Amino acid sequence: MDATQMALIHIVSWSVGLILFFVAYTMIKQGKAEKPIKITQMVLRVFYLLIIATGADLFFNHYGMNVEDTQFSEYIIKMVAGIWVIAAIEMTLAKAKKGKKEFSGWLQLVVALILVLVLGFARLPFGFLP
Ligand code: HEM
Image 1 (cartoon, rainbow, N blue to C red):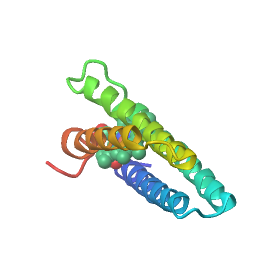
Image 2: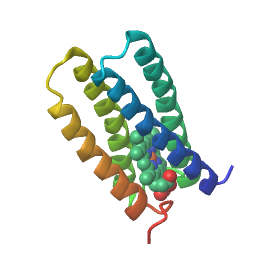
Image 3: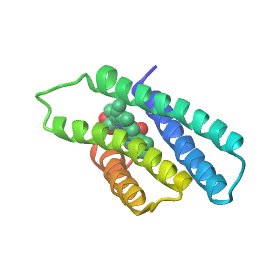
Image 4: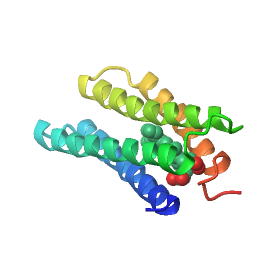
């Protein structure tokens, strides 16, 4: 599979992940039953694996993990921020479930998401923006 196809699967994976996050969050807020929320979260976690696998493939197989590259550090930050998005999603959902303050979760999610979108789309070569 070439880089463009892999990038597309990466984009579809995190897009579906974000949608599932909002679905799970809304269900928690609406006080829906435990089971459908759990199932949504299980599906969401499978998408984490897809996000990480396609991200790792882009890095190792298409970028080639080139330490000499001037953008190497941006790749590292992009990947750490990607994991951070996933962590922030988990935190926000856990806090919402327990009825705790969600602000720190949302703040991390927004910051990590902005980082990842700017690096992914605007800075790193496989993005669509110039
Ligand atoms: C929800 C979390 C994530 C979001 C929103 C996200 C977003 C993006 C975006 C917008 C791009 C640029 C378009 C593309 O080429 O697909 C991208 C590319 C990429 N992502 Fe992610 N990503 C996430 C998680 C991850 C993770 C966990 C990793 C590492 C394991 C990762 C590694 C990469 C790599 C290596 C690229 C290619 C960069 C390039 O050469 O242009 N991403 N991601």
